[in-house]
Length: 216
Image (tube, rainbow, N blue to C red; front, side, top):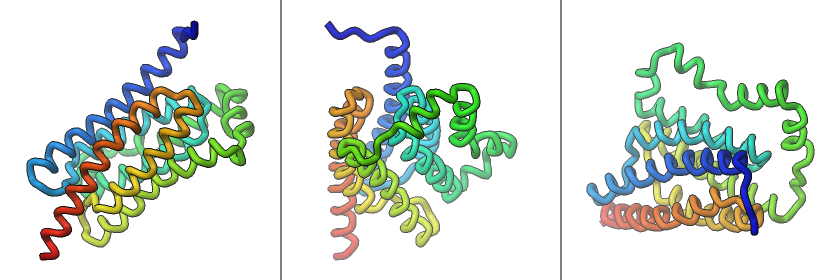
């Protein structure tokens, strides 16, 4: 019978906790969107995103998963930018902002110095030509590209928005990540992205409906 060590259980617990924060942000955003009958972008969505992103970066380090590390590092700074657009970032004390900003690179730097063998495993032994890694990387890249897409619309409107394309990209990317998770035997990614697909599909409908109403 397959058994997990206490160390593995602790790693998965961290991953599920990070994903629970990602899930909570979607749930809150979903509820607010349903109430207003359109897709909204609440500030708490981005606060939870930033917190969960850093925790999931730690999970990626512990899992020696370059795909997660690459994806979450990009996402981390997009979340910060959205908090800036929301006007919330400047309300955070300056010292805390200084500490938060370099966290992804500080985490990787700490690992390179304190655990060089693990760092080499992540950086040097990941076969990016492997089909599963390619699919996972594309999925993660799309999950990050959706934020560049969202960022573009937000910068044009000078406010944080979550357009239809964001949710369509999210839904497609989640399918790729689920396939990657199955092959990587990663229950955290499998559960989180499977559940996320439902919210992405629903938000796609709400965003499409809002666009149809506004065009009439």
